[in-house]
Length: 280
Image (cartoon, rainbow, N blue to C red; front, top):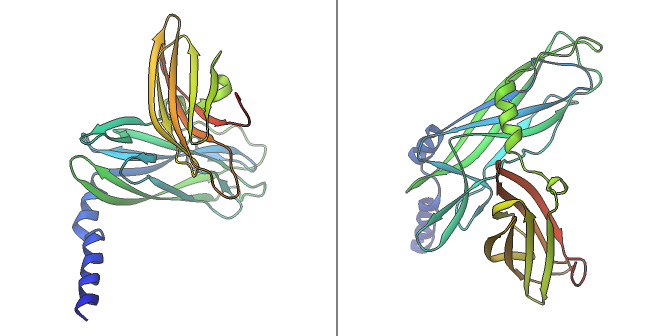
């Protein structure tokens, strides 16, 4: 009986306490936005989960790094509508004592989701979208939090005029922060080397003055360290990788975001590099 009671008390101590959740909820405000004032049958449109994080605090990227918890975003749509997964902007790197590295979002941040309306929406009514979000908000201490938001958007008839844009400036800025496809990074090359459990992946980007890698989690391939060096007219980043074989077999694969600093500022690119053979 005493052992059971001790175990129950230990588990209870690990669970978020009500006051902790209240604090976590208060430190982050959430809102749901749409990029247009109305939706017509078959329209493709963008929804945005807007987070406003208290100054000096942060929430976490989809890979939090060495500690933290990924931010979770879910958007419920009316029947017939489809909503894609939330798209995260590139994060910031946060270094803490003990060589702890985390990937975070601060201030005002928007997570975008592409959506599509069915071809038989009822003009004159409204579509209700519901945001459900969960996060861990941290400074020197951390608090779990959650929030909900609702958004109603007018439904328009097929063949009606193009709906007026909404939240135009805010969403344009948010889209600019979303990582672009890798093939839109001009002249960039990558090269695998090494064998067995120890591999390297080199990135060369013409015109870059600095490179920073934010990896996503992987079942097989872990980033053990990175080093970058600017050369005349280019920059190279070398990622040292630890590869673990699993069943069924999967090749080494590094997914994530590469942030490129150049003469025009920073831009980011979505990476998905698979080693398909020697030197590939």
